[in-house]
Length: 200
Figure (spheres, rainbow, N blue to C red):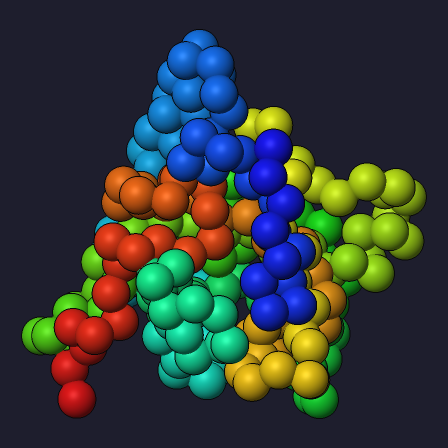
């Protein structure tokens, strides 16, 4: 397992493109991702997501690694649509905080969309996020994990440019990409996702 420090964020992952090394485990990852994709297929229509309580990130940001003090080659995340109830949001100022400890990827707290030039949105992945303090207060002594991978720990470092925690209090998050990610389908950023198609 590798442990890389990117501009104040410790990112834990696996050497083999973010996936467990054994081929059997890699097959399990692929099958699980396909099951998650099927479970959320209705959200390919962003209007269905809105009807079921997801809201677009109020900042309107399409997240790029380079915009948060990280190497641009890591790629982009896209636009986040979130379920405030699953995240347990309790505050939005000065940073987003909450009580959420939701980890069910069949009902993810966050949907990831790639904006298109015509204004439409393409669902490219999902994410779950738990607030570090809430997770610990719930009695967990270890970070959450998914398919053998420890979730990423995100905390802003005021000493470097950008906001590495995207305006949130310290938290753990885990992305699951439906669009093949050259870095690994469980890594936080995806070089195959672009914010640059977004219409002006």
